[in-house]
Length: 339
Length: 277
Image (cartoon, rainbow over all chains, first blue to last red; front, side, top):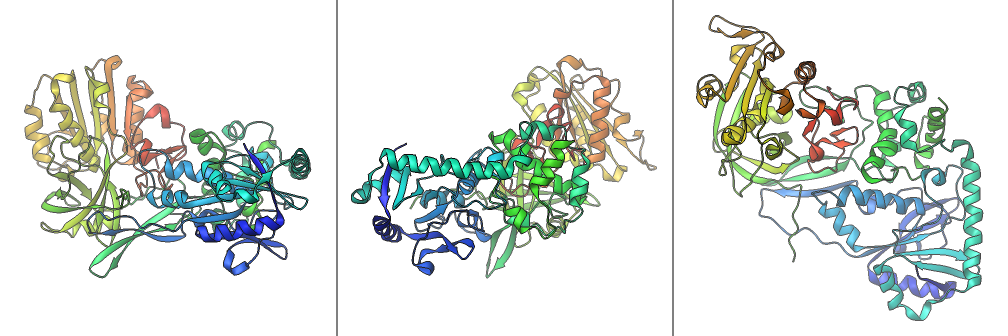
């Protein structure tokens, strides 16, 4: 992939170009926390260093939105403005890859997700300050994006190494030729040194959680493991782990009257809820909390890889931070691995 | 502007007729305002305006193009609302969705159909699709059980018309869990008539649709009779909400029942958690 160098001073020009392109969201660091905000609210870009506390999925898949109105003739779907995300961590880019499979593959494409993906420009960045809860490296990922971005930034002395990952990314470079300078050997070796050192940090803190083999193979033998029941004890069924998860995409459709018509709404839903899979006739495949708790792990690490070839856990660690019951996915899996 | 198909939007359909099948089951004959074709076993989401959607497999022949029958038991919020609807009312229809019965792959085979209760709905669509091209199949055995004689769906067809289609090739076996003074046939659960099939199992397939407990025991009976797991086709009832493989409600192991099914062979799903629930 082609790489360039952009100095910090020139990068400001790129920011104003991105603002003119459409909506611009930036991962912005405030005190110890990084969050995704409209650029207008922040006014500047500081290298985030680590993933934002919230996932990127709401930018592609709204918490609540209208998906149809009826009865009406077939109408054109609403178009949205182009938008850019500046500051997508490697784990979040992997999450978008997972969502792409679900929403865009198969016989039916989700038109709302597709429109947002078409209009989005994703600018990733290398992690430089991983959190204690980060474990991407045991989920087949690295703390720096390697694919599925449009552009990626690696912070080095005085500027950024910018890697181009797509045609869309190439167009940004073409439109801003004057600021994209050749990346030198020195630039690249600085980048690579930072990458190795950050990766080593995440590997070190993940060492005790490293699986003994492929997750699928481990889970194939772990369905009846007592670790599920032991670990679900502090679960309060709040589903925070699912709503904060960058790859969870389950939703509920419901209808409402709207004047002389009706509208269909789509809202995030969570498989932790008791009636999630229940049918009208009364049958419920997962009536017990432990079954729903386990389902989440199997979906991420067994079912999803069977369907799409990679884990739907990105190792972002948000579920660990969000859980009021202090359930740590890494520790649950470690117990499962042990037995 | 390019018009993109909205996969969540229903097509309006007019209710032409409402037929009382049993005290809790009605058949709604609807005419969609845009043509919707389907194959036997594929399902559709039916919308009661303002109330919501629920998944149903049509019960009419896929060869009938103008209208679609939905045979619906009153069990939940949406079905209660549908049961209040009358001729002239409108519903929404979204589909067809999922994978139905692979009729072409069954050419030259003997088909054993085992159904119970409102599970007779998709099976009628299948039975009609099979018998309307009967030259393609060697034999069709239709075993159906209901709780009482009053609970038999499509009673007139199933008792009077179907046995006359071609007595050499088409056999109908009925049973009820509890008989009454009018009932002269078999009494017992449906598995009691799934025996002495007179079929060559090596070139036969079995199809099961009904309440979960009935599906479970019918499947075990078919296995006991010697059907290979991959020759038993089950119509899985899961919470198919979006119907397009996105919302996650109907997962059975790694399968999205709404897209990978609802018809799945037993070998694929026998070890999946919650298969019969």
